[in-house]
Length: 205
Image (tube, rainbow, N blue to C red; front, side, top):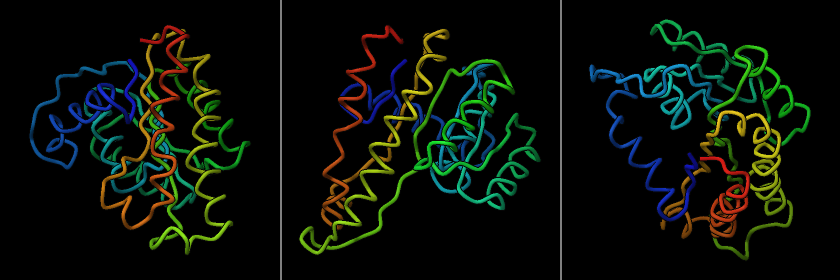
């Protein structure tokens, strides 16, 4: 299943999160175990939206691999979810670093032997303000971490996910407010759409 931030595929992920929103934030809604036995990787998942997604997946039966740039944050998030009785593990991963991306994929395979779901939630936004005030360094950082690294992460994961026939790739959703405050974010907004179209040829459902 391709869950992307574009068109009808975007609706699949947003609908899933909307339906399970309250459970992800700790309410008593019962899990239906719709992801029982699935293996999910969620980048940028030690707080905020990423942590909520990781929790929800685990509550629905998935084994979730959390990641973040700082070991302290990884340890705290893993402990928090394990204390809730969820099946999670964690690893330090800066998605902009090739070696870290490879270690993330390897960790998932070592732990569970497969990958079913990939959520590319990690991203940076180094600038808020008018487009023409954005520096070249800021522009390059956004594209390196948010666009190029996402593509390279998907490229690493897809060969393993083909075997399972499933893929979930979610990039940070930008809103009209994001685009107004940080036009550089809007500039890469459509990359998920085209990435999803490119993956279709691999017959990943």
